[in-house]
Length: 406
Picture 1 (cartoon, rainbow, N blue to C red):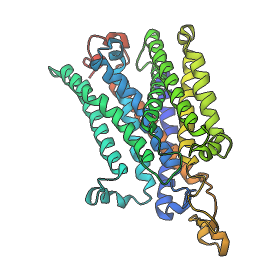
Picture 2 (cartoon, one colour; picture 1 turned 60 degrees about the horizontal axis):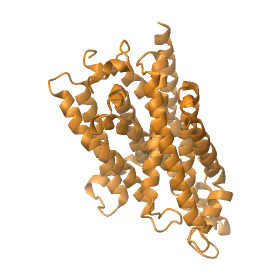
Picture 3 (tube, rainbow, N blue to C red; picture 1 turned 90 degrees about the vertical axis):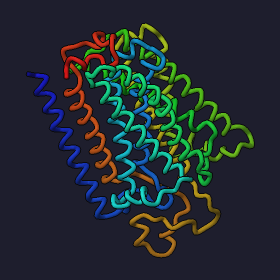
Picture 4 (cartoon, helix red, strand yellow; picture 1 turned 180 degrees about the horizontal axis):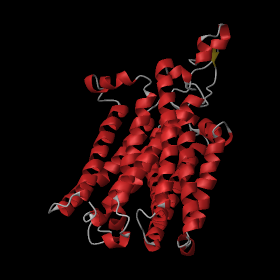
C-alpha cells in the first residue's frame, strides 16, 4: 500500500511537470524559436544537446539486452526486459527533442516528401526510426508467450546490436562531417560517441535497476550489478583514452585545433569540459576500478550519477565550443538573429562572437520531456515487470520473468 501511494505521488509530480513542459512548448510554437536562447551564431542549443544525450543513454539497455543472445552472456538475460524498456523510452525522448527543435511541427511532413539523401541528419532520422522499431519488436517478442518467442528474440538481437552502434555513429557524423565548424570534423568522433553512449547508458541502466530494486518492481542480485559496474569501468577507461587522443591531436604544435582547444579548456565551455574529465571520468573510474567498491551499491550509484552528468557535460562542451567563434573575419560580423537583435538598430544588430544561454522556455520544455520519459518508464515497468519474481528467476529464458506474469 505504501509503495502504491509513493508511486501515485511520484506520477502526479511528473505529470504536472510534463503538463508545464507542454504548455511551454505551445508557447514556443506561438512565439517561434525566437523565445529560445538560440540565434544565428548558436543555431543548436539545449534541445540538440538533449537529443545527443538521450540517443547515447538508449545504448546501454539495448546493447546489454542484445549481448545476452549474441555473445551468450547468460547473466544479462536476467535484466534484458527492463533494459529494453529503458532503451525504448530514451530513444523516444531523443526523437521528441529533434521535433521540438524544428520550431514548427508542421515541417515534419517535409522530411518524408522532400528528403535529402546526402544529409547526415536524414540518415539519422532513418536509423533512429529503425532503432525504435527494433526496440518495439524486441519488447513484443520478449512479452510473447507463443512457441518460438525466445528464438525470435535471439534473431532480433543480432540486428539490434549493430543498429545500436550505427545510430550513435550516424549521430556523430552529423558533427564529424560538418566542415564549417572547428572541432567537429574528427576522425574519431563516431568512436567517441559510441563509447560515451556505452558508459552513460550503462550507468543509467544501473541506476534504473537499483531504483526498481528499491521499489520492489524488479529484483536484481548484487553480483550482476557488480558485473555491470565492472563493464562500466572498462567503458569509462576507453572513453577517457579517446578524449585524451583527441586533446593531444588538437594540442600538438601547429595543429589546426589549437584555438578550439583553448576555448574548450580555458574558455566559455571549460567548466563543462573539466567537470566531465574530473567528475565524469576520473572519479567514477577511481571508484569502480576496485572490486570491493563495485560490491558496495552506494558507491556504484554515486559513480553512475557522476558518469551520466559527466556525459551530459560532454555533450554541452562538444556542441557549444564549436559555436563560440565565427568562421568570418573582421567587423561587423554576422546578424545576431536573436529576438533582441531583431529589434536593434545599427551595430547592435551585429555580433562578432557567439553567446548562448537557454531561456526558461527551453528549460521548462526539457524538464517536461524528461519527466514524461520517467513517467513512461515507471508505468511500463509497473505493467510489464513482475514484482513477485527476481531477476535470477529469469535466467532460463530471455523472455524471462514475463512469460508467466502476462
